Image (cartoon, rainbow, N blue to C red; front, side):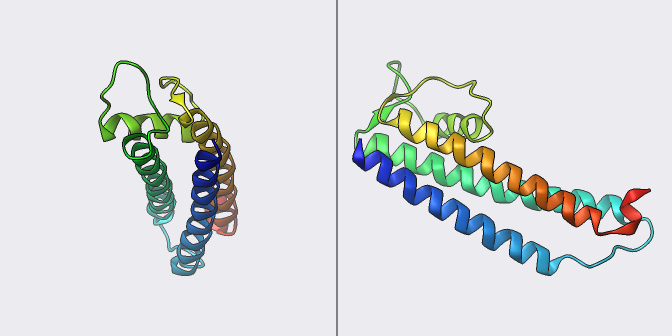
Amino acid sequence: MILSILISVFLIVLAIAFHYWAIGVLLNVLPSECGPNRHFLHAVGILILVMCIHLAIVFGFASAMWGSSQFLHLGSLGREGPFSFMDYFYHSSVSYSTLGLSEVPEGHLKIMTALESLTGIVLLTWSATFYYSVMGRNPKSRS
């Protein structure tokens, strides 16, 4: 149990640091204003890049869960195994987004899943706030 908590804390710190770095890079790359008829492309471009940030974080959590299951034997996604990496990616994405539609994992992966969900809600809220503030600073976005 201690190992799964340590792995989860490491992943949370890594996810927060990566999210902070990626949002900072995105903020520095964005133009302060977008020209006429470019607001839609600007808005969609930001959303696509933010989505890529979250997919990278989900991939990291899925990789850690898969590795923890395969090599450290901390649990699995259920009794019907074996499970592929895609199963872990699906589980990680629905856990990160706090949908919770996936299987209930067995063993210490339960702890990792719960902490991933907590991380997901915080980082998704952070991204929504970032998007709102970036789009709000552009006077053309209010029309």
